[in-house]
Amino acid sequence: MIDPRANSKGPLAAPAPLPHVSRRALGRINDALPIPTECRYCSGPVALVDNSEIYRGRSYGGWPFAYWCKDCDAMVGLHPDTDLPLGTLANKALRTARQNCKAPFERIWRVLRLKSRKGAYAWLAEQLRIPVEQCHFGLFEVEQCEQARDASLRFLQAQEKAHVA
Ligand SMILES: [Zn+2]
Image: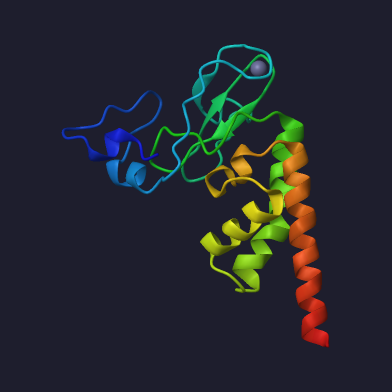
């Protein structure tokens, strides 16, 4: 669902420490997720922070903010120019799995240009037997990340074989 603020009028309030929230950026996000307030791992409070608070004084990225549970170090980044999370709060193991397992999937739509990105997600949703609107690495748990990786690798291998034959 698109965040209702995308169609609101008047200036948008930006929660600290964000410099702004862009209505246009909100309007580009089809599946807005709820803003986390309580950690799903340890039930600790979740704060919106400049990620330099997490990374010992250095901030990373063009929109260097995150939702962060200081108690257990679970976190998730934000869609650029918004206060909306990129996914569910993730601990270290899940962040690593999301990052690593996405790489083979990205080759399907980006490098090989076999499908559009949207088409690639529709394909992946079929592989994982989940609705396409739930098919997003930011929503996956470790097991789904691994399933997505394996399905993508099988697809790439089959493509390579077909290419050689
Ligand atoms: Zn926590």
